View (cartoon, rainbow, N blue to C red):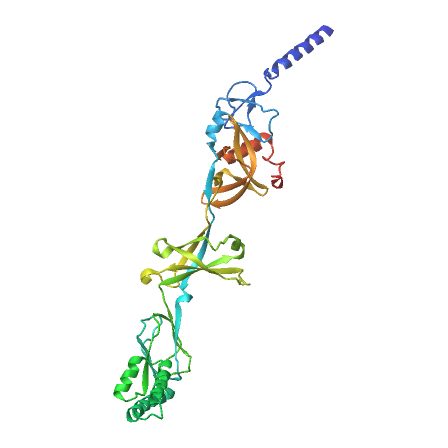
Length: 401
């Protein structure tokens, strides 16, 4: 009976030994599936999940802990592409919403130089265009009429007392004439007054500037004081694009930046301009500042009130740049993958700068000639986390760069 028990124990030991998986001589070599990397075997075969042929791989014991090695098949399936980083150029661009407005530097007012009642207005509508020298309004003024009579009287006395040497009637006539000129009458009106020798009760005044009416502060029959504004005019040969800027964006504005005004109503028409003014005061309620960009308006095609975009472009500078998709960013910083050897990749931390279109500036962390992964960086990141169970560069600090 004792021999039977011993024989049975030997049989069980032999069976258990045969049931164990054979371990290859090279313990660093294993087989895995490129589609299902969680499958690991120590001999060739097929994946039990997708039934693809297992790929031979080698463990990377030691070496840089931030490196990862992939098979040729994994690189192809992951669409991983690399490129050599070189010096490039990048410039900042800031896009602001704006509205076209009158250029206040080319605005003017026509005011009354004498008190009186406006009997007639020749332009009554906002937006009417007034040419310089056009009749603007008729005014009835007692002071002006008295000054006309003084002028006519001075003309008559100079004629009658031409031989009188005691009184200089020429100087009196010039004084009366200067008063009428200062009150807004023209040389032609004075010539007509001297020829007709009759003063009309109302006087026509002419516009001293050209432009479109933006304000009409008087009506027919109303009185105007000396210096009272009759109309305000705006010259539309140039306009202001007034853009709103948030407080956080002020540091990005350079007065020397190239300004481009884009007009959506004209199928994206772009006009080059220059920054004329940056408001030093910030609105306390909205925390918004205002900048003005002056643009030409040939043919007066553009109208105040039109929407626009102001694009501020800073001068380009030479620096290292990468495609935006090559950089992985999170709350701890930014990293990129570089190729250190054949099929071997390493995660490095970088400091980024300006971002323009699809390019991003690399300030530190890379040097000219580094081979950088420009496509498939996120897949490499995921593969690293799966295989090593940690985030790349988890032990590094951005402050130590």
